[in-house]
Image (cartoon, rainbow, N blue to C red; front, side):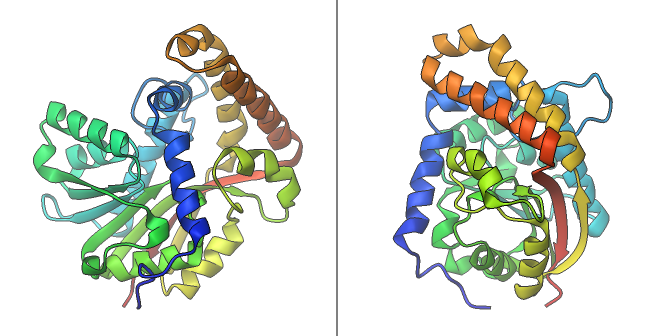
Length: 296
């Protein structure tokens, strides 16, 4: 398939610069690490295997589930598999994956500070020989020379920042080897819920329009990626939103000391309160993991 990396609209690169602003300043990195990661490097939504787990355990459960899915769809060849971690953030998933499978991971991520922190952690864990970082904005496409390069593409809650999801899925297919596997999770709008209900979230999260499970299903087919499964983890969202809110409240003074402002934190408290209510009343958000194969 052809690459779309040569062309992009200005809105695509605008999304990229806003994502850096949202996630890659020292203060916002600390915020997300505290509020979504519970102090760890798994900075994304979480699955509660038991009722007493906090955000850190739940977020680690998500990574474990996604790695299990990778292994289930196509057993990982130890010390040989080439993985693209698309939108790798602080590298939490890559660190766990390399330690578990011995994969060779290329982390593609827009935040240079996050990339530095990722590689520092790799050095501490003794896995630096398995991991490299490439700074880039996937809204501008992926490098031409990556065609048919990867056994797996792994992406956790990142495609919500894609200005053109079908174009990115076509790029993912291009860089996957024949028989290669895509495993990705995303936060989405539930099918049938109006964009208006989701507006407070899309405005805050550098998301133009939220994906929907049914749309991803269609877009995977259009990109010639065969969907193997969709694991719906939406039932965990209301509790996770509530725990994020509690993390902000419990760590408020420390976050102020880290340089975050009252205004920033109050906006988050309002947004998360809205999110808990909207999810409780409307089940407005969907969240899950897709597994797909490049049968080419």
